[in-house]
Length: 341
Image (cartoon, rainbow, N blue to C red; front, top):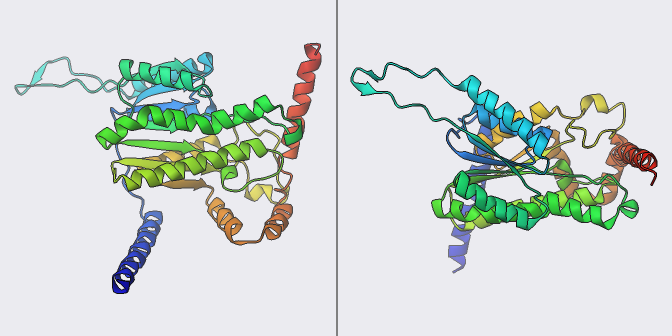
C-alpha cells in the first residue's frame, strides 16, 4: 500500500515538473491561436470600453457576436462598429457561378445580435439566454465582462450599492454560466472567460465592495475550472483575466506614488484586450497584465501582512483609491446640488 502511494507521489512530482516546463515554454514560444470563425461569442457589458474592444477583436476573427448590455444606446454603437468590421473583412464574392465545374460556396457571413440585459437580475439573464438560444443558437464563447464600481468608502456606501456591486461583478457570473454551460458540457466544447481584476488577487483600501466582488468572481472561476477538469471535459476551456488598473475612466483619479507611477502607469484598454485575446485564443488558463502582477500576488501569498503594508506604503498603493473616491463624492454632491436634493 505504501509502495503504491510512493510510486503515485513520484508520478505526480514528474507531472508537476512537466507542467512547469510546458508553461515556461509557452512564455518563450507563442502557441498557435485557435480559430473562432463561425462560433457564437457572447459578451456582457459590451457597451463599455473593454467590452467594445473585445467585440471588435472577435469580429475581426469572424465570430458571430451576441452583445449584452444594460445601456441600449452604447450597445448599439458597439454593434454598428462590429458590422463595419464585418463589411471591411468581407471579400468580394464571385459572380461567375461555377469555376472549373465546381460551384463556389459563399463564405460564412457572421452577424451581430444585441440584447438589453441587466445581468444583475437573474430573471433577465435567464430569459434573455433563452431568446439567444432561439434566435442565434448555442453560445461557444462566454465573456463575462460586465462590471461596476460604487466609489464610496465602506461606511459611506449605501447598502443598495454594495449589493449591486456584488451582484453584477460576481453573482451574474453564476447565472450566465448556468444558462450556457449545460450545452457546453453536452457538446464538450466551449470557452468561458472571466474578466476580473488584479484587485481580486490583492486588495487596497477604500473599495471593499469592489475587491470582495472580484475575489468572489475569481473564486467562482477557479472552482468551476476544477469542476470541469474533474468531469474530464477537456473540450471546455477557461481563461481568467486579471489586469492592473485599466484607463477606462472607471477608476479615474486613482494614483500611486508619483515617482513610481511612470514605471507602473494605468494600462491602455487596447493593450489589455490584446493581451487577453492572445490568452483566450491560445487557451491560456490565466493572464495578468502587466506581468509584475504575478509577482505581487506571489509575494502577498508568502509575506506577513505587516510586510505587505510596508510595501503598499512605499508604492503609495495603500491609499491609491482615495483621490478617486474624493472625486466621486464631489461629483455626487454637485449632482445633488444641481437637482436640489
